[in-house]
Length: 246
Image 1 (tube, helix red, strand yellow):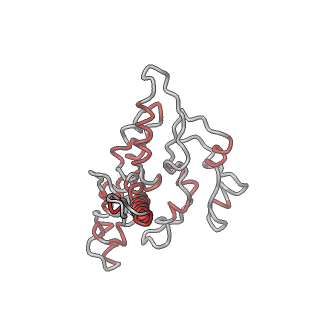
Image 2 (tube, rainbow, N blue to C red):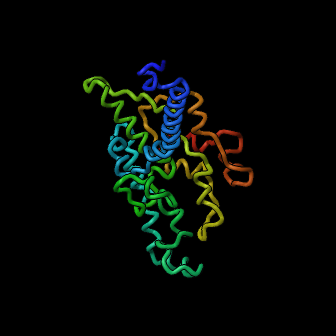
Image 3 (cartoon, one colour):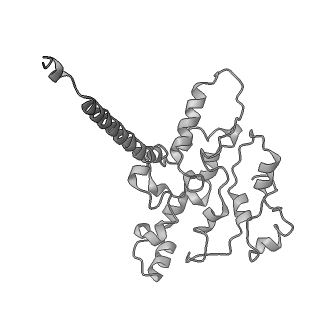
């Protein structure tokens, strides 16, 4: 005799198939989440613009890096392309408007060629060479520092605690500079990385540096053919960079 409820019970094969289906669905969801992570991480470290950097980098006792930037030629790089001299140079190269030509703009703005999705709301490409040209996108750094500040005792003495490695570029490599300061520029002049780095130096005086960090500040990356290699960098560490910041 056939039991009246036997037909209502799922067989072991059906249960196994159902379990397999659930596993496949979960695997698909995990794969989708995993593939989305790089995009989310990238979006979370967008370019934010110097005006947002100013929020934390404008205090005199910590070096006022924003003010230092405002006095540098870098911050007016895009404006320079609108001058008569720039237009004359561009015309000689067959360019009508240097502010609209990639060949010119690429070295006169921050985040050239970067997708709009990687720029925070309000980011202005026309401001010129800003903090993030050398230090990389700053959104992750800004959020991390703000989160850390929110947990601090407001009445406690302010002490420089450093920045975790990889959060932002703290020591821009020479290649960042020579990417634009090279013979491709129509107005190129012999470029001494060490002397130029000294001219734009904007250190935080509250930061206590290790011997390794001090050595990095005076390290000469210039090649043998550079004039400074025969002068300020002749014996190893750059004597120019060893001077106090202006």
